[in-house]
Length: 469
Ligand code: HEM
Image 1 (cartoon, rainbow, N blue to C red):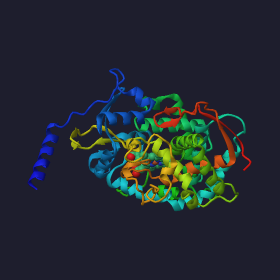
Image 2: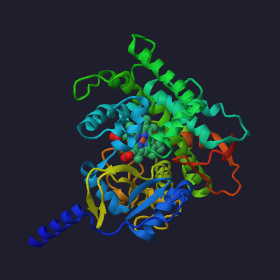
Image 3: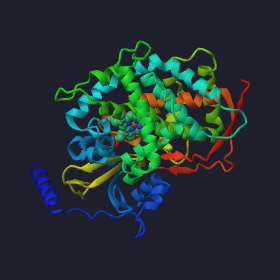
Image 4: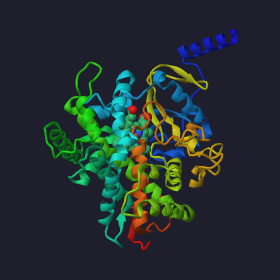
């Protein structure tokens, strides 16, 4: 007891005087720091630096400095201490600022955050998704029907459009009906600059201003229609009711800007993140004959008839889900949680200072052999439910939760994780059920684009022709 007390005292002392082990600096050059590897393959860089320096190191890139906490210990520490030591607001405040709102969920903390998250949850629930799912299947089917056969196209661009159309329709009843190119420009710069991956000046670019005008114009229009008594308007979606009825802690309703700041997500987040994830999944499937055959069999069983499948059938199809999980393990879209330290604290003997910008590199654990044998190999069978090897999306997983973090790990975990699983599987499974796909990537190697989120390169093209199954 005495010893415990003494060591605690020592730690507080260390905290007060900035003592502790010196934080190593990650590889990089004098001028640009670590910018180059961060822009080429950030996950590989985080992993290599973790192997070299351990769970704490500092990264410098283009005039910015981040303290990285990496690996399973860091992820566990993050989860346990998130509310006390880590603040998301300084990172994500740009989202709110750009849209003049203080109610952007990811950029809120404390009771305001918890309250708003609770209110939004029904719109993302399995029930809400299940009700609209047949329509989502149809929307994607119709979009796939429009793809010309034997003509090359960019996989990521096509998936991004379809993801945005189908998620927008599912959550608001109003698919985006203006220029997709402008929506894409808005989404990529808004989200990229919002997390600080893109420089803030990109918001001043004329092409962003125009894209923003078009996107917000569409959102304002549907918001206005939702607020008048229009019997033809699809008000059955939970999101409309939540945005209308929600009251902030001080009792005031959401402002029009607050509503806009939440209404864009089904269109933008799905376009940027889901489009890329679906592209990664297709890439890996095309590289692995065995997994492809299992996946295609389930895709045919579920999507090969006119009647759309039930949501539960899709969420429990072993190979569809295992292939997606293995894709999220090997090539996650979210590599780290960005935060700012709210106070001085010590982690594994290293002293973190209040105000330090930090990245909790959750994805590093995805590559550790103690959790995944041959971690660099894409092998969905590791996620197939069998004795001793259970699906990690269930509570019975054999893999510790900090080893597989596709959707974040603290109170900010992705509110749309079920929606993301459903739409990604539906996009890729329906394409594989309907078409024979030829990849025009001769080498078969995955070329990444980091902008600033990882995506298969938009120049990756495929051709499709109707399959005769
Ligand atoms: C591949 C697709 C997606 C991935 C990998 C993903 C991942 C994540 C991650 C890692 C976080 C936590 C961020 C942090 O801790 O700093 C997050 C939060 C969030 N995501 Fe997603 N996301 C995806 C798609 C979507 C979509 C389509 C929507 C909306 C329709 C969405 C809505 C949100 C919201 C509102 C939060 C904030 C939750 C909170 O602060 O409580 N995400 N997402």
